[in-house]
Length: 273
Image 1: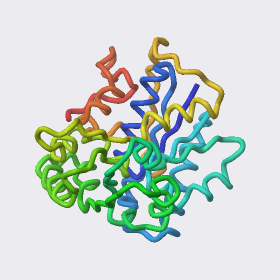
Image 2: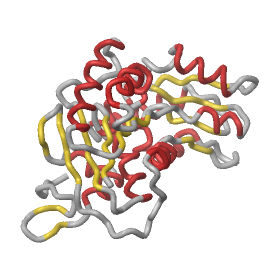
Image 3: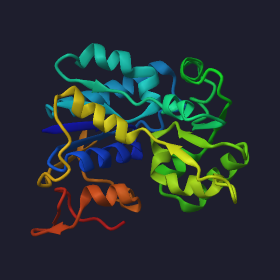
């Protein structure tokens, strides 16, 4: 079994780790776009063009499914990706977990990039799934970029600024950008109020990974023998696993320990974090 994931950058790590937890035996293909990132400020047409190029590079490795592990690409490019690649290659998009958050009751905050916050796409999801629930849209300028570069000071500053814009009575926060899932516990610590019930964070990675398996008729098998096959593609070129990914537990999980011959267990040259 081979599962491909695509994003402009580090945002695909959470979903890749979720796939690895559900199916340790799956071969992973990670297709990123360091030359074209960030995608957020681009026009929908440009996002679609870049997403198609990244998807084609992944599809060349003949995966069984392709996960679009990026909210921006899912918003703007999913129809074009599916029109070109399906039905031969199932394409699974990423949708903010607004529906389960609203079902649990409000108030709810949605943390997302400035481009997604207030977009017709997000407003439609709110109207469809959170009608009658108090929802606050919280733009998080700079957070995705800070996570992409594992810049701790910038991450803390962006989270603090977004937390200040989040109502103190929220019961749950929807993480509307895949990058944010890599710093979920830091977000929880910033938003959690003293003496309040534990804040619930709604992420997308686990649901997206499970949907990918369903689309190809595969059942979860967390006890399966781990695969050591992981392929990195950087703007269409064969690459190595970015060292910055090792700053996050999800990245370290994917790479694993060192194997004989100077290769990591994931098949990449050893690189320092």
